Length: 460
Image 1 (cartoon, rainbow, N blue to C red):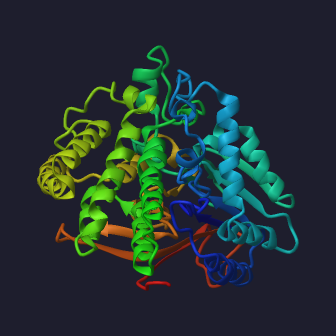
Image 2 (cartoon, rainbow, N blue to C red; image 1 turned 30 degrees about the vertical axis):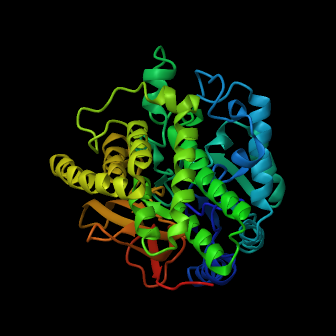
C-alpha cells in the first residue's frame, strides 16, 4: 500500500501556525490503519511529497543572523548552487532551524505516526521527496542524517522523485514547473551560462530559487518585524494579539503575489493605529528581500515576452509594490492590484489559462512515463487538491494527474476579486498494488483512492 501526502509545511512556529497535531493522531493515522486492514495491505510505503519540514518559513534569520551578508541568499553566491559560499555557516543555520522544527508538537506527531505504522510488523518504507521549502536536504547531508536518526526503525530515503510501476506512480513535488521556486533557468542563464542543466537533473535541485528568499525575508521577515514593533509599543491586548495571529495567515495565501491585496482586505476594519507600523514593516521586509544578492542576480533573468502581470519578473513586481507602499500605502497598492488583475485576465486569455503543473504532468506522459506502465503522475506544491484525466481506454488504463494538496488552511481570492475566504484542507491519496484491494475487484490492479476534504471551521 502506498500513501502520498504533501505540503505539511511544519515550521518552527515563529512566524506561521502549524497543522494541529490531531491531524495525524485523529485523522491520518486511523485512516491508514483502516486501509491496511480493509484492503489487506501487503506492505506500507509512505511518500512525503515535499515541503514537509519547512526550513525557510521562520524568523530565524531576521532574529538570529543580524549580519545580512551571512544569510543563505546573501554574500558571495556559489555559481553552482546560488547559495552563500560560506557553506559551513549555512549548514549550521539550516540545522538550527531543523532542530526547532522537530521540537514542535506537529513534527512530533508526524514522527510518532511514522514510527507506529506498519504491516504485520514489517519495516515501513518512507520516501521523502524533496520540495522547494525543504530543498536544502539536497545540499546538506547532515539534515538527512538528523531526520534518519529520529526514525531509526524506518527505511527512509530522500529523493527528488519517486517512481514505482507496482503502483503505476510517478511522483514529484511539482515545483519543477514553477520558475519562481525552481532554479533551472536562473542557473543556466545567470549563475553559470556555460552549463546546460536539465529540469530533472540532480544538480538542478541544488540550486536556490528566489521563492526561498521571498518566504524567509519577505513573508517571515514581515511577521517578525511587525510582532517586534507591537511588543515595543506595548500593544499586547487580546485584540492586538488576535490581529497578529491573523497576520500569520499570510503564509497560506495562494497565489503568493496576492499578499498586498490580502493585507488591504485584512486591515480594512482594523484599528487605524495598526496601519502605519504595518506599512513600515512591509516596506522594510521588501527592502531586505530586494537587497539580497539572490534577488539582485535574479533580476538579471530575461523578461518573458508575455509576462503574467504588467511588470516583468517577480523582483520587478515587488519593487513596484514597494514604491507604491512608499508613495501611498496599502490604498495605493490596492489600486495598482486592481489594474493588475485586469491585465492578468488578458494575459490568461492569450495563454488559455494554462495551469503550469497540469501542463507539466502532460509533458511527463508525453516524454517517458507512459512507456514504463505509469498511469498516475502525482504532484503537490500548489496546495490545491485536484485530479485530471488526460486519456483512458476500455481496459481501464488511464493517464491521470493527481495533486495531493495540503493540510494547511487554504486562503484564496474570491470570484468577486475583492474578498478572501479560508477553508482547511485534508488530502490523502492511497494506491494499492495487484495483491491488495482485491475484494470485488474486476481485473488487475493497481487501484487508487483519493480523499479531498474541506472543513470550514474557525479554531480557537
